[in-house]
Image (cartoon, rainbow, N blue to C red; front, side, top):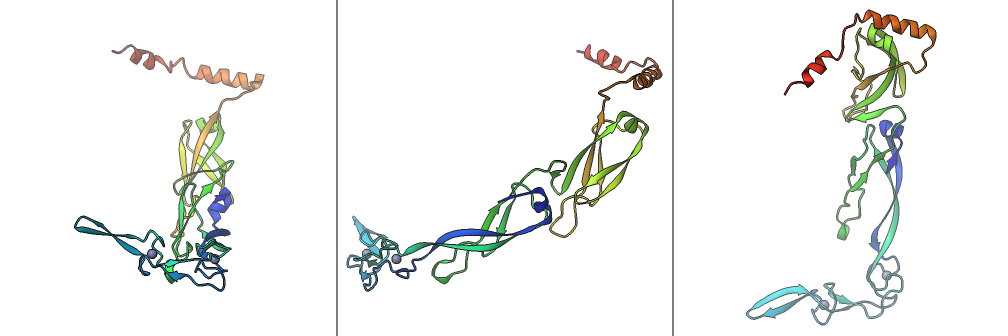
Length: 244
Ligand SMILES: [Zn+2]
Ligand SMILES: [Zn+2]
């Protein structure tokens, strides 16, 4: 089942059409044409088993005449051609819990194929595929988000507004000297868990370099370069690169 990101987060009840084997409605599972009845297999006398002798040993095997059924159909039912089985279609309501993740397998107890001879039904397993969101990603119970920030915002520190999934934006405080790629945690704004709590929102900052440099910006950046005091960022790297 393929779900949108929003539906996977909120949970959804969806109808699923299932086909499964059931008794043929024409012959009620006997496999015999209307008005006729299957006869007891003469080879195995209705046991469905026959004994094959190998030296002093006897092996029980399914009867080769009736294929283990114990009955032989002389006039097969035209609907099922003697098999006694038909393909039935039914629709069930599948409840997909909130917070389901891509690749998860949901077990729906008792929604599988009907049991044999009136036994309990099996389970239905639904493989979930979640379509990606434009903005939010998923890491376990947490949601992930990358936000662009300017160099001054990161260097001087700032308060920025970041979106949350299906909620109001929250204010995130960036400390002075925030490096590119640093991740901040907004508690309780992630994916819903089974116990009703929520994961966190992990916000990663992406420091932007100005693409258009006008005179005003150039002047400010030149002053910033001078303020660096000629400190060579790469001197240590160049030194270490010469080590054996
Ligand atoms: Zn038989
Ligand atoms: Zn039939």
